Length: 351
Image (cartoon, rainbow, N blue to C red; front, side):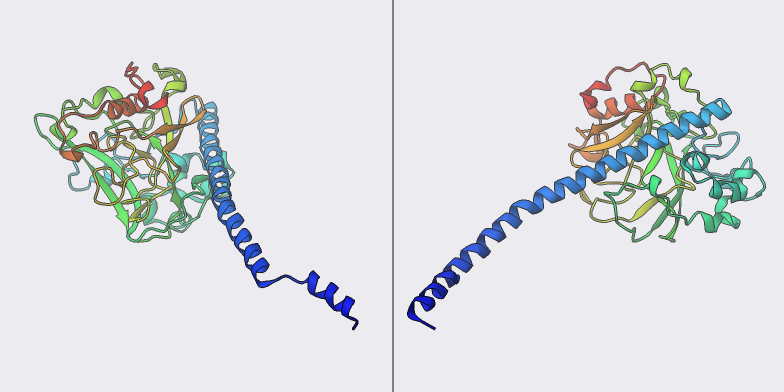
């Protein structure tokens, strides 16, 4: 090789310093690119979640076109027994199937709906006590799940939730939750809006921090038969379906909601996305999400909008559940959940 050829060869090669500079530039570009990629992924997941809720809204309206009313929140006791006496779960032949189970034919899941005996009236027990219903209830339905939530619960699945009257003269009420240790049941991140007390609620109950639940009854309650046109607050001002994580915090999941049983959820716990142990911790009964700053809801007119958390969690996050005065944002959320309350405070969370 001639001296000139050797010089050309040396000039075309990278020096160690140049190579390190190139690697550093690539690392910086990757560092800049990853957050952008994550934002794009979350934007796509949020859009998909919004579309799922939109599909539920359309399905509910199609259900009304067929049966003249929206589906019931859940098929519970008849009459609406509040206090959980012996046989509470079997009073009035409840099947405890939730609103989503009624919408199966309208989200391209008619094959599951047709096989469920509790939906056809053939079953004499609840869906978890008969087959093929129990097996079918393990079906994972994409439309019922938010793509931003990929966690598996550590404890189990929520089969039902129902309010009850404690018999307190002041009208104190509570809720009964029925769960399974089975974490493979068909999951849902969406459920119907019941208002703060699932059905008629209580009047100035001490447990409610002296808040009157009763005017804020939502669209989906026990054996409800609501028509869109009877929502006097206006369908565009009333929540119909919302999303939730069903756990103790976004990072730690204890329970998940099930589409077969979690037909509607009360709103008394507000919108919570805080860590476990905090006054704003995610609870099995709270509406929550992995979306930044908001929780998505489908309104009665089928539109999907994000609601910001504000200070709506646990009625008063400054003092937690022991607070004595519900926050303005908590009231705004209840106003959104009620269908005939005439309360205009909802704008506090939607503007």
